[in-house]
Length: 127
Image (cartoon, rainbow, N blue to C red; front, side, top):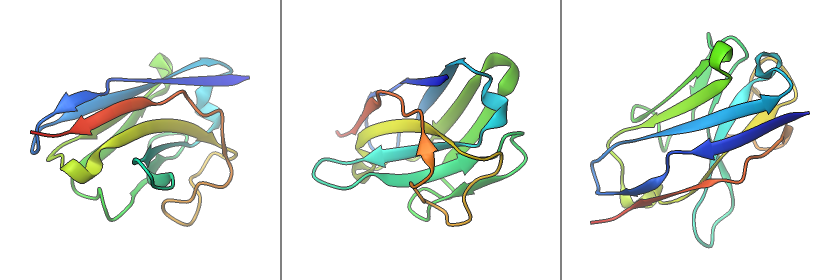
């Protein structure tokens, strides 16, 4: 069974950067697309970005496009989310999860079909 664990969250000022990591254990992660998600206080979980099994294809929600970059290193069993130009509205708990296919879902930001959720890492953007 694939297990995922997020790390790298913290407190950052507006305009700052953070790099989140999603580490895999158990089954090989190169059989899955991986997505990053965010849940802000009092809001539903939203999909931010997805990367296919090889890393050749990525997608982003409009809210993070141009600011966030997803990448993966299957040899290291790691998926990263580089977050730049952070805004207070980026505050929330960030999760990674594995999709049930090699490619990402057709609809950017979809949550259905993702499994093996990590425990989440808190990101707070505040001055």
